[in-house]
Each structure stands twice: as C-alpha cells, then as structure tokens.
Amino acid sequence: MPSRSCGTETLRLWRWWFVPSSWVLQGIVSRPLRQVRTWRLPFRPCPTFSAVSPSNACGSMRLMSKSFEDEFDVRSFTADLAWDLMPVARLWHRSMDRVLGSTGLTLSEAMPIIAVARLGCRVRQKSVAERIGIEQPSLVHALDKLEALGLMERRVDPRDGRARILSLTRDGQALARKLETELTMHLQSVFAQVSDADGEAALRVLRVIEAVSRHTLASGSS
Image (cartoon, rainbow, N blue to C red; front, side, top):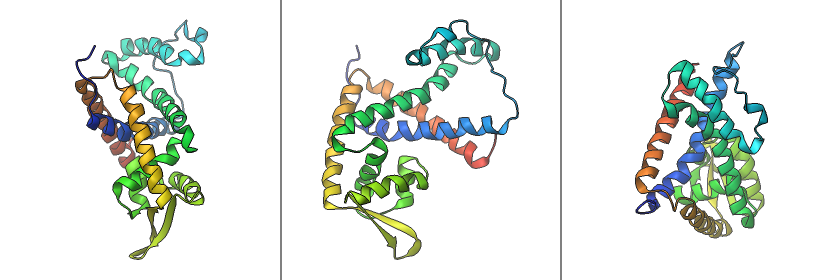
C-alpha cells in the first residue's frame, strides 16, 4: 500500500494530460496505417485471442504483444503500453461521461467550460481547442450546444474578425464550479491508491508521448 495518495497537483495534471495525449496518439497511430499499401501484423497469431471477449480485449493484446517483443526485441513494457493507452483512454472518457451525467453534459462538452473558466473570462476559441487537445471543428459542435443552453457566449474578436472570443455566462460560471468539484472528488477516489511518485512518473511518460506525437504530426513523417 502506498504511503500517501496522489497529490492535488498530480490530479490536476492527469485530468488535463491523459485525454488530450491519447487523442494526439490516435492521430500519430492512424496516420502511418493510412499511408502504407499493405500491412503485415508484426506479431505471430495468438491461439487464445479468438476466445477472448471484448471486455477482455486489453488482456488479449498483452498476450499478442509478447510475440511482438520477441520478434522486435523491444522493452517489455513498450507493446503493453502502446496497446493499452487508447482503450484505457476511451474507457476513462466513458466513465467520466457517467460521472458528469447529473449535469447533462459529456466530458467533451464539460472540458470547454472548465478551460474557459481557467484560462480567463474572455479567451480565444483557438486557445481553448489547444488547451483541451482537440481540433477546432470538433470544439465547435460542443460550443453550439453550450451556447444553446445559455452557458457560453461567442463573439467576434474586435482585433481579428476571423477569431472568436469565448466567455461563460453566469450559469456557465456556476456550472464550472460544480464540474470542478465533481471531477476533483472522482479523481481523488480514482487515484487514492496511487503514490505521488507513480503519478508523477506517469505524467512524465505522457509528456514524452505527446511531444513525440506532435513532432511526428507536424513533420508529416511516417
């Protein structure tokens, strides 16, 4: 049992690094696969894979990754981490949607509210998209709903007619405080058994994955 629980700073960083980093990784993984004409699985077939249920998918991928390690001589955790990151991120996203169910918002809709509350009362739409790690077209869909609910306002930036300025309404500000409280309580329960050292090590790994993925996407390398 760890001697102490994961600290507040680690919880805050996990909330803002885990989902965006996994979205960036999805882009880096899918790009090379689209660019190749043929694709040979880099591991030998696993005889037990066909008997594994969808709920057990991560475990089956670990079995398959052992052959990957044998063939390519990679470090033992490399294939497991690569296979587990995106499924776990999707599961995390779904669980957070459940936690936020009482607000009537999904995580994708709640994150812009929290981002605007943290970045300032008047912040550019582009800055919010970058902060939560999604493309602007995806953000627009969430903003349409938030604006219709009277939680968010969008106005033309007087200094740049192409840009949009986001601000929270009074109801949006109240909801932002509620979201922060509910998410913090949930994260405290999730990471109760995670030490500060483990949490900080995980954050360092996520930062490396994000940095390398962004560099690859920017350079267009395969």
